[in-house]
Length: 535
Ligand code: MSP
Image 1 (tube, protein in one colour):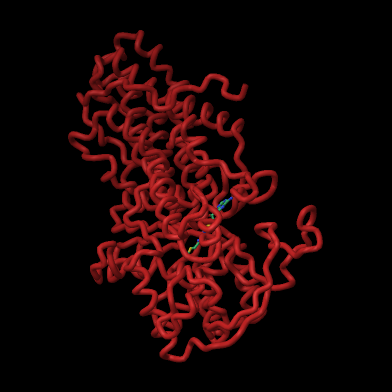
Image 2 (cartoon, protein in one colour; image 1 turned 180 degrees about the vertical axis):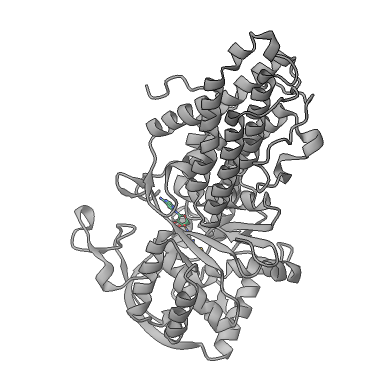
């Protein structure tokens, strides 16, 4: 929910540039885009931040094995893959932060200097197993025994790759001293970690006792140098988490932006995958407590897209590029599918067969067909001008009631960060309208001249359906902006109701907004039926 400032600041994690995006990454971005578009249509002041995480050993090693510098590698991946994928997904972010930007590096140095000066950072040494995939020291107890080519070695439970034993002199953040304050904070703010399963995991972890955190590395130099000891670079996670704050402090041109910070800090929602929950729900708030800054309202951990029961990943060669699916189905259908088919917060899997089946059933036959039938009937029976409705019967009122309830339920689901439930709620209206058309049989009513004119039964049926479709265009715009925009055009409402993006979701369910005489046009199909894609 937005706060008293009526502002809503939402972030995605910043993505590692060691490789190009797959649909697991796209999943987080699409959820962020749907939620922020919805909040914008609530007339809130929205800021949607995404970006890339460019330091650390993982990126450095990939660059080395490709024979280029880490900066060259990062620049290439950002330009060729991470920025273009936003367009492919039709995501409308407000800013894109890269951790190699000077605006970020200088603000990070200021932040850690403060912690160092006040005694929250001290020198020490650390020895332990490190997973470069996670960029994290692991506890011995969480490692698995390797099999096959990794027989005899200990492997990371997330990446399945052998960990490396590291022994280094480094600096530590005195995180353990924030343990009690963190536990008190979780207690006072049950909404801070969502969903409940994620909250329980973090509570259990912190209650076991927090250790201080090693926050520097001195065996390589691809990172932000510590201001007080340039032999060390800052630990990549400490650097990365700060992006959420530094992006509001300066713009890409390096100019201070205090008004942005004032308006949007702290974040309303950090969306993260469950693999990076602890960094966000433990380390990040401890850093902010140490700094004396306000904490974000909610960390929401979503599940993984699985392939063969495991997290989809490029390293395991199971990554599917978003464009592979979008080239076939379009970005709207991609967004719809992933936002509806998987309960947000739980794992899910993708299959071409399921995607094709959902596309045909819900989009081509469900919503798309409804829109084209209505436009065709207004064309055929009223020359393409929306008629004047007559008296509403119970059946028409039922549609208006379903629309009002769909709005209320979808709004509540958005507040609960549950995109799939929001779409389920909206779909009650798609289903009700299809049933309504089947039951009201306007094509039969049209044959009776006494009912087929202005103010007659036929007109009332078509206007009711048109109002339902108008509500659907508004409610589905955050999920499927291209199709919703086509429908808005076809209903001809823009001239007097204004642009679709500016339509408030709260009043979408109120009927009587379309004007009699409005030109309704039958454009191209919203979702052309796929002819047997499974063969
Ligand atoms: N760079 C860190 C995040 C730093 S945020 C301060 C990172 N990057 S990542 O590229 O590996 O992952 C970014 C996001 O993509 C994470 O939220 C992660 O959970 C998500 N996904 C990566 N693979 C995924 C799936 N197979 N399924 C769903 N989401 C997954 O972690």
